[in-house]
Image 1 (tube, rainbow, N blue to C red):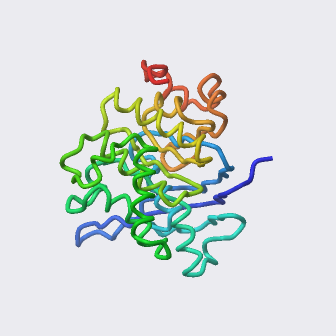
Image 2 (cartoon, one colour):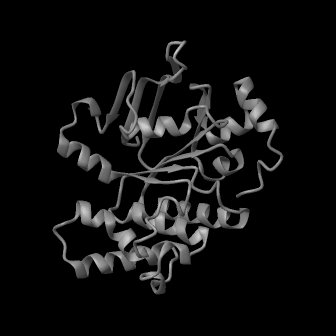
Length: 266
């Protein structure tokens, strides 16, 4: 039986919407009683239309958004009970790949310094030379030439910048990668390359993933399990094969039928 890394129970989240001075502020419910678990080695695809709560769910798991209620349990410990050191360990072991490959990188830092940044935070015990070696090793793993070490983000393509973001996220050997729309801003050929890289890293580094996308073809190509969100509710949660071959919810069926290129990315 696979080890359970993460469990989310009855999670709800809302945001206050400011109104004009004549009307009271209003709460917008974004997530409603979310329940799911994530086992080691699994890629969980989270799919749904824009605004359905996908990214909010990821940010809430990372404690970047406040939740209204519910529990987020990491290795059998509720994050409500985390100490400062627990949170530091959690954020080392759960890393994020962002949607915008350029926007997620500091334009004033070299590629080498960007990738080594997590080492500066979490591995202060190792020497500068060892950090450099680790950066070069991880650059090779993600298909980046060492000639890019002293370059800046503006000198790289979008696909190369996303590889830099991936290298930064795996340099501390995390348990879980949260991939928040990591290929949505890339063209199709580069999307395919990045997806292939993520699949290889999952196998070679034994990484568990939460993969967020509005693109069903992308989710189908990489996921073991798929969770479908609609207006903050989970309407379907099953193996990828079952979701795409035998969807149970009408919303899921409509999503799948609306995508002509569902098998375009493999």
